[in-house]
View (cartoon, rainbow, N blue to C red):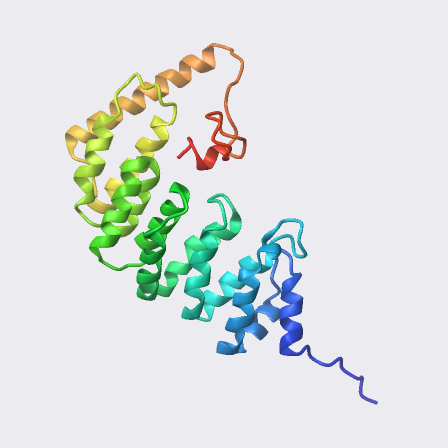
Length: 263
């Protein structure tokens, strides 16, 4: 006598399972949804656009829209580009959903260009503008509008924008990076100067290779000063004033430190 097998879930039931899925998406569920092809796009977009599902106290702890983003990109669903970019307006940069969209939507390539530029024409705030600039910088598309957008982000926050310049890879970025590296002089009131320095140097090396001798000497002097300060600090016990990356920024912006004065 053969054992009776349970019926396979219907397509509708697959998305109901996904609606309450936690952080780990089972390979079987993922493959069954992807096997639906274009028919999976609309239900996944609906999950992405459901703001309640993005809440950490919602079924699935906020993960269903994040899984939807991954699945939509894996499906190469260009119809999801607009909804994904629109979702960036709702989130903060430190949120997992926002980060996942920024990282993955650019995989859809040149199709993202015009929708992202349209969003950038009326950004919600500076964080939203930076998120869109990062998306544009990763498209692998040469366009003067992208160049202008990432330069604006760089001028606002060099430590953050340096990465966008590195992604884009235009040699015109080299004098901008060099000028900002030389502009770092000691002593510095900005406690984040060493973070900015490393981001600027990494971007320069990604685009232009080895630093010119004079610039390399300037960087070495700065890093030597940092090491001397670290040794002095270690030899002088003091009350720690270090702010954790996920703590509120001491500037009073209301944002987490890692997404405010840390960048």
